[in-house]
Length: 330
Image (cartoon, rainbow, N blue to C red; front, side, top):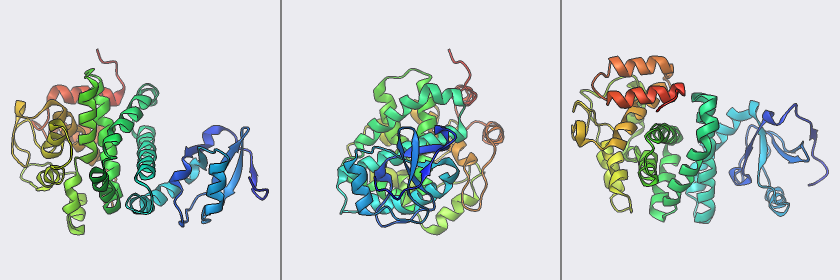
């Protein structure tokens, strides 16, 4: 390291969160400081609004640095930075696909960890985070297919909030499905389907996204939008399983047949899709969107149970509530 960095002695490792140097993008400025760790001490490597120069980035690589560190109190600045730059990097033809895939994995892992920290019990995180991170890795391995990668990169570039929602749905779907002890193949197919379930919204206009935010706390009854069918059409040429395609096509269908686009019901809806459709509604209700503050978890669960009565499998609903409460499930 060069000799002009400032020494910072933290009160503890918990003051920081790690990120890969690949997640510090070229020719961009961030509203956060970057530190490197040496023997338990943290050195200030770049200041706020300072670009990580190619020379400094190369130095990190030469020194074998796998993680740099950012103060947790500056997390919002880093999240804003990722939202602003991730899509452009993932679509850049100047960056090798393999490196872009690593960046996508790192970004998704950070999103999973953030969702666990903000929305799920600490005890659940200790038991399940590693398993779900592994599931993210294996699911994203499919997205290293050039065409599949272009779809997910376009989604992130178009609307990062939508990708964050997809990651949240991925986590909640996996956490709920895991309580049924399914085989790995079912989990992977559902994971890929969850990550791509809203891919049809690439066809949306800005006004449609604004309308979606405005109707965040409405039921799906008397409402229909073609994005599930559009998404399935977008993915028809990809090597997706029938189960993953069903997640994309049917994630707004309801038990009582009042969903869309096909108004199928009951046993016509595959089991993993039933789980995904429930957690999709929950995350939409609880997530903050531009101009719309999300519900508290208890209020969202009550809304699903009363205002959306009949929409979801009652046994899956009970199991999902137990997952959120981290109750023992036998």
